[in-house]
Image (cartoon, rainbow, N blue to C red; front, side, top):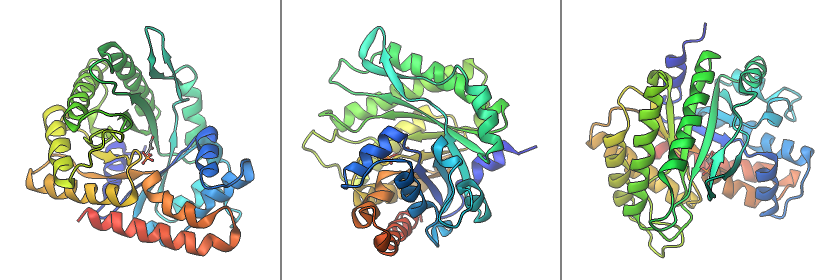
Length: 330
Ligand code: 13P
């Protein structure tokens, strides 16, 4: 039987982190279109191959989160992506939520769906090579109005049900209640919402008897909203983020990973470096690392443009960014 706690901890090996390559078909299509790249299953396969089969990525990656389509696709080497990742010591994971829907009693907020057929899907994903999973909930800040306590609570209940199912299927759960960077809010408001989100989440997880030891929390950093006109200094971000985590996250969980959330690659790298420094200074009780999508992929996508001849340059940019993000941890 797989040791869930050891697997969960393995993502935090020194200098290593996770690539989130789990954009749904709709999100991947939108992401590629932003770089003038076309749509369709084959171009998405090439998009995945660009990153998943980049030589040297294994030096920096302990895991990759995939989308269900990718579990069944092959790289240019004709090997299934989960097999070639595993062979290089990178654990394949899978996004298992099925996206969001409006919350009926507060329709400007979103609730994550995907619990109904989850056990059957988990057993398929496991057969296809996945060893860990992710479920994302979205928390939108709008002044003092949003989020509502009831939307935070409903998303927390679903995260808890997800975590229970995943643990009993023998897989590691990553719980991602993403407090969005989009908005005009202050960093203080972001910090307040993070505190409320984690406070609710961890009390609901305890009520549902979720074992914290194999739980990984994936979170945004405490940031002033992207449209606030304010750019936070990395030390401010690190202090606020870690303070709220220390106050609300139980010491028993396996670790904490950060999403990039729309920060530039440099911003996500510098903030991670400040977080790692502050975590050492504050004697943080859990390990920390990155679990980025955009901050790791952006520069490579701009160079790739969907063209085979640009693959080497795009992969070089990806590996350079990985090396910087990895160095930020030490
Ligand atoms: P970003 O790093 O682009 O925010 O993506 C991480 C992720 O998995 C969001 O769900």
